[in-house]
Image 1 (spheres, helix red, strand yellow):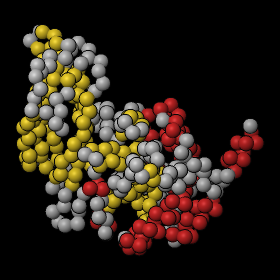
Image 2 (image 1 turned 90 degrees about the horizontal axis):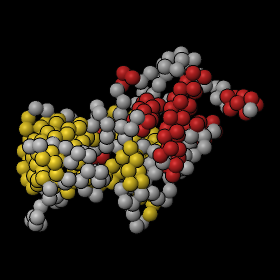
Image 3 (image 1 turned 90 degrees about the vertical axis):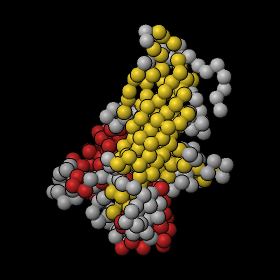
Image 4 (image 1 turned 180 degrees about the vertical axis):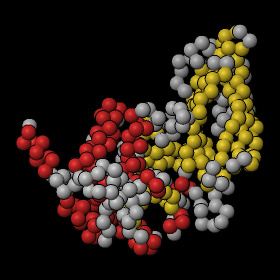
Length: 358
């Protein structure tokens, strides 16, 4: 046992030991969650890359990976990236370590790429986007669907960026981590050295571990769903026994930032359920209730840009019962600003409709 440990530690002798331990904790947290909840995705994790693998990437792409990212890949060389399934338009099942979302047919599921795929995808992308080559970017994560979502690591400043719909210049990619958290110039024996890749995966592991994001079965396979489900990044309200949970995500791959006006796209997830005591109206308890109406007020900053009143949601009138599965739907809205808000209400009928509504 001691010999195995010494051999393992010897494989990382060229790296600051405190940083190696920090990276190991990051991977251990993610792998523990995968083991308990999503072993199918854990099985796609590749064994650690060798120093020769990393050196090949750096030589071919003419970059120098930030130290934390090098160590991340020494533990696990991304995920096996399966070939596309023509029937589902996805690369195998939705086993991406980063996860994704879906709404109105837009399906995203993000894998962490192995080094061989990083080289291939970066070379192909650089032919279209010359700024990637000039600024030492490499493509480290991508959606496994034909709804493309791409993540670029800047090997010079350590920042991780996500691409918008048409990332023609550096203006069209969005940083994933606050710049002031990134530190690549600490002493080599310090665990404080951190790039965006490490910070991003650490936060992802925390969200998985604490249940902020969860595993969902969308009918065509299980996947990690990135819509938050717990406070403080998920809003919850209970009225007369009806529980509503709402959360939102920015959708960068469908945003257009190429002109001064810009267009930002946000998707939101709504979850409706009935508490065990049923629907309580004026002291009377009903064992079910059915959605009738919804009202949304959408603001860009503090300016109302949309006031929506109408029957049903996505053409449906869900019937809620205690203990039944949540009714979940996703939708989206464009905004002219990078921040905004959605508020509103649902109107339910106690019991259920006696006739079909049209």
